[in-house]
Amino acid sequence: MFKPPELLFCAALILFPALPASATTSITSAAFGLSSTVKVINTVGVTVGPVGAVAGATAPGYAVTGNVASLNTVVDLGVVALVSAGLRLRTGVISTAASANGTTPADTTSGDASALVNNLNISLFTTAIGSPVTALGLTATSLNSQTQVVRIGNATTLQGQSTFSNLALSVLGVPILSLGANATVAPNFLAYDLAGLRILLNEQISGTGPGGVQTLLTNALHISFNNFLLGGRALTGDIIVSQSQASISFDPVPEPAAWTQLIAGFGLAGVALRRRRARQPAA
Image (cartoon, rainbow, N blue to C red):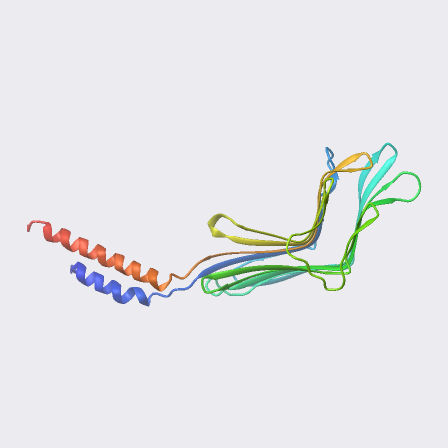
């Protein structure tokens, strides 16, 4: 039996508010302890890591961890005019973790990632005759980064932080920076930037991708080389220590005003349909 538009509109007013309303959320998080892409320009080079990498994605929620007992490697940077060069990367225990809550996209609300690197020792050196000469030296008892994402209602918050214990940095034998136990610095703290060598502490990079995905990446330490001259060769590449990242995408719950607009739209459509039928001649 045909129902007049007025009845259809009334049904919409009654049924529409009764529909369940919930945000659907997707969260991913990841972490690793150390990676290096440092090489001599115009050579193939050797990539190290990412060491201790972990990652996860909802739904459902997850909790993954990684553990590496130690790292001790030397990247050979070749010999130029009887001068050899190398990059030593040494750590103690590396612990990483990534997690998120929820069982379905509707009840997923938070996620985080962390990376802890103990007993870090980075040394960029040259050797000609005798003992090595250190061009870059960095040691730390520990470096830790953590990135967290939380959704409350229709609002999301992404936060990152890095903690350093007993970090010491020197370039060409000159002390540059020293930090005590459980030290923190401001986001994107520039420790050194000269002659193609750039060192950032607590680097935080945020962005929004396709579909409104919000992401935050935290690097406790980021050393980058851009045509950095070392013993007759030019270096390029990056060393990243203690990286954590999290991202979120969600379809928010419509606000009450949005529901009102939707219902009003149905009402206008019903009125327009009724008027159009009223103008049609009787058969």
